[in-house]
Amino acid sequence: MAGKLIIFSAPSGSGKSTIINYLLEQDLNLVFSISATSRPPRGEEQHGHHYFFLSPEEFKKRIANDEFLEYEEVYTDRFYGTLKSEVTKQLEAGQHVIFDVDVLGGCNIKNFYKDKALSIFIQPPSIEELRKRLHGRATDSHEVIEQRISRAEYELSFASKFDKIIINDDLETAQKEAYKIVKEFIEA
Image 1 (tube, rainbow, N blue to C red):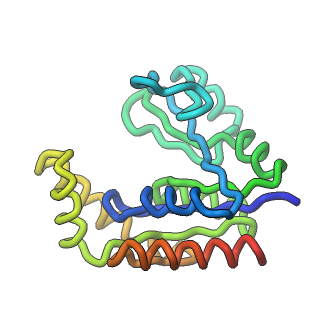
Image 2 (cartoon, helix red, strand yellow; image 1 turned 90 degrees about the vertical axis):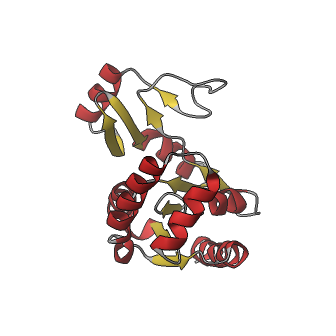
């Protein structure tokens, strides 16, 4: 049986990664979609495990060959994207593929796979709460946080394009809601 796709998008600080990690630990036969990037590996990162590391030239060649479901050039020659071939392998193995992508990537994947994909938007309870969470992480400067807030306001405008919206005002509740939604989709 072919697998299904579950797409998660959210502004930074919404709890998306925490919810995805929770779901990966459940008995749902989920596998994480590994992205490709043109940046060099950092620290202990390994090709095929953390990312598929490609040179900028190889990445551009694959774009020209229409090998990506979605991709973005974040900075000059710094690309991130999802390879169609890798997702196809996972689906054919009967695995359910979970994605952690930006809103445009999420919309592109949903448009490509239609009903085989479920798109879920994780929404913070408010911009003020999001600002508080980002400051609480203590990993970014005030300027970076304000850039993320500005981006979050833009990303929030895409929420209605997703199949489901989960408002993460309580992490445990949001995790249970995500589990229920994903389980129902997989079993349908």
